Structure formats: C-alpha cells, structure tokens
Image 1 (spheres, one colour):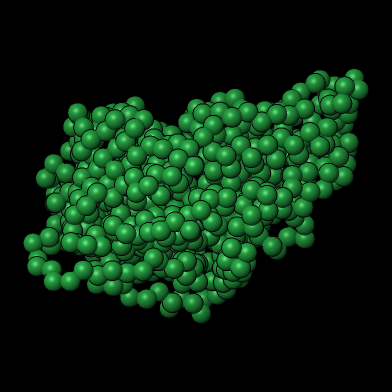
Image 2 (cartoon, helix red, strand yellow):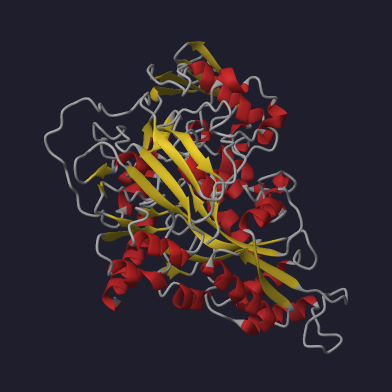
Length: 614
C-alpha cells in the first residue's frame, strides 16, 4: 500500500505540472475527434439511488453486493479494505475542487482581514493532508483549484500550508485582540468577548475531522472556538440566503475549468444575492478587475485579471481552503463494465450511468445501484439546489442532460443538442451591431421531452430568457449581458450579447433546456417554489431516464427512457459481449489543455459548483 500511495502522490504532482503547461497556445490542436458513438447510451434499464449515510455502511453494502458504486470518494482508511475485496475495483483522479470553510466576513470580528489571515496561518494544512487523507491530498490556498490552468497556486511568495501559530498570534496582537479578563481567551478589539462556532456535516467523518482542525487552530491562537456537527442541508440553506453563521465546512466540485462564475461568486455586487457570495465579502480592489475577467476578449486579458484577483483573494482569506484531495472511487466490476472515470466527476457520474453495460447476457438491461451519502433535497431542476447529491440524480433526468453543448466523458466540450454553432461580430457580419456578439445555433431535430413534445429552438430561447430573468437563480449572472434569445425557425436559435467576451459561448451553451409549454405557466418569480412530486405530479423531463419510484430518505429509482434521443438500438442483434478492465486513473493532460486554450470551441462549459459535505 505504501508503494501504491507513493505512486498516487507522484501522479498528483504530474497532473499539477501538466496543468501549468495547458496555458500555452501550442496545445490548441490537442482535442481529438470524438468517437462516433460517444453520445450513445444508456444501456441499463434502471438506476437506484439507495440512501446510506454512513461511510462504513456504504463500504459494507458494496462488499456485500447490495450496491454497485459509491457516490463519492472513499476515505483513505477504507482504501486497503476496498482494494482487497473481490470483484471491487477503484479509479482515481484529482478533484476539480476542494474542502473549505466559509467565513462570515460580514460578522464582527471576522470582518477583520488579519483575523482571517491569523486563522489561515494557524491551521495545519499539512497535518490535514497526512492525518486525514494519508497523503492523498495537497495543501491548497487559492479559490481556483490547482488542476485549473488559471490557478495561481504555487506562484505566490508565501503560503498558508504550514502551521505558523507565531504569525497568527502576531497578527491578532497587531489588531488589538487581547485577553483582557485573563480567562485564557482573547477579546475582540472593541473589548467584548466572542467565540467562534465551526459547523460540519453530521454524516461525514472527514468534515468533522477538518472542522476540528480549524477549531483547534483558533484555540491555538487564543480564540474561544468549538466544532459542532450540524445537518448539511440546514447550514447549506443558511449559506444560500445569507443567514447567520460563523464558519461552516463543506466541499466544492466545479463543473468545468471555467473561472468566470467561480470568481464572480465573490463579487461585492452579489453580497446580498441568494446563492451567491455566501461569505458576504466585499473588496473594492478585487471588484475592480471583474470587468476585465468577464469581458476580456483574449486569453491573456482574462488570465491577467484572474491572477491579480487571486492575489487579493488569497491575501484576504474570505474562505479558508483546507485541502485539494485525490478522488478514489469504488465500484463493483462483476455485474457491470464500462465505467467512465471522467476528469470532472470521476467514476461516479453521468457518463458512467450512460456507458455501463452488463458483463453477462448484455449489453442491455440490469439495475445499476448507487450508494448515496445524502438523499436528494428537491426535484426542482431549475437551479434551486447546488447540492452535488441532488445533481447526481437530476443530471440523469433533466439538469445537464438537455443542453446545446456538454462536457463529454473525456473532459472535452462537445455539441450535444446543437449540430452547429456560428459566432459572429460586426467584423464578420455588418448586420451585427458594433460591440455585439451573435451566435446562430442549428439544433438537432429528433429530441423530445418526456411527454412526447419535441425539443425545439423555442424551448431553448425560452430557457435562456427564463434563467436570465429568474430572480436569485444562480444561472442568471452569466446571462446578464445577453440581450436577445429567439427562434427564427423551429430548430434555429439566435443568441446575442451586447459585449464581445472570451466567455460568451460558455455563458449560455450548457444552460439546461426546459419545456416552454410547461414552465410558461409558472410565474418566473416563483421558480424556486416549484416542488414537484416526480411520481405523482406532472413532471416533464428531457433526459435518458425518468423517475419511476421514490421513498423519501430511502431511495430514488430512475427508469430508462426509450424515447431518449441518443438511446442505443436495443432491437439490433448482439453476438458478443465486450468486457473491459477497470478504468485507469484519468489522463488529465488533454482535459486540462481543452479547458485552457484557443477559442470557445475547446474550453469546457459548466461553471456551476456542486457542494458536498466533504
């Protein structure tokens, strides 16, 4: 096991090295042509998401052949057990995200920058890496993951990696945090006592262990603090709507290598916006770079803004990044084969659901069983939840399954419901106003909603306008400069922005396409109040599966949609069954390159963030 982990550590280092190479334009031609059948799937009949909250119980269920895959990475302590289990395989990759602690920067005294920096210096990130992840993670400081070519990680003259209690104490002394009453705890600069509550999920050992590290860092510098396990969805809701908290632990996984929405999350203009800027941070210098980041026309302009903004962000510590870990996924390989270890989601994701096939008597049929850490919290697929556990379900029925473009199983940005996309400026076409960017999209003509109605350009135009105008929807910000979205013909879509930007295509191409004939009857200001029962209510979806059964807190069952546009031909005779070995660790070199260079056609979309408990 020591040798295996050493190899994994080397793999992490190589991936980070390759990510730095990805900014070079010489890699622009690296994207390979897609396989002819890359869209085809699914082959299974059903997916069942069984809710099993405890880590050890999910491992046991996998060993006992009660589930086929675990929804998230397994903790390092379980790796030897899993790797020694017959008919269980593992796959690994580097997380496009990190474990973090949100700090309420609007709340005194956490609004003092040197207080937050003191905590960052006192936290022992290297101990987290070794004690919790047994070396299967890296210390990290920036809001941009190290796998992302826009990341500043490793370029600053300082880090918060090593425990430095002396520097933490110096900063607090400088700001006037003094133990006035000699009770062992510092008072705030105004002389008043205070304490810090660090919250972490009740169902995650990793979350609670990291939360304890953070609370210990606070007490090491004389701050009265404690860690308290809390319901994940309860504190997530407080973050969504800027309600009260001190410090909260969770983990982010980003849906692409795009950074515009990632960094826009900390824009001062969003300090009161639901689902945005959960740390309530305002910094005028950071905000002054936002226009160049969002509306720069070249990679160089965007890169400069991203680097300068990260310098400010890392110094200010509005959020404490604790680790960027290696994902190790576990799944059974005796009943199904063809798991896809994609570079963004890993082996437990949409592409595995699309591509797995039975090892015997296949390729069609069978029930693919997930062990789900936390139950889905809503079937509203309009963006009312950023829970990764919820999206694990929704992406198979609606969210992401119907979009103009999609990130494929190798990490490349491909046309999905779009056949062709043409981008024009005034220089290309005098009919386009100066300073504007017009996209003309020809859509596929054989996709249908689950009620049999065709998916048309009218649906796509309605969807873009709906999400742009839906108050508080986290899909609205990237569409803010979209001035028009309309369908001149049934399968032709025109989208126009009042600015020419590096990110314009990214800002709309993977927005979910929703059925106009259903949602035009729901007031747009009530988009987040729609809480359907997917079995009992009219529930129109667009994906490869539909919800066929559900018991809250126990399981969700999805069944194959035979009318899915990219469904394989199940009537064709099959003479052989293909069996493939477990997938190797993901090759990130090409995926990172695709996310870094050239025109919009090679940069992946989906700058949304999925929140998990660890």
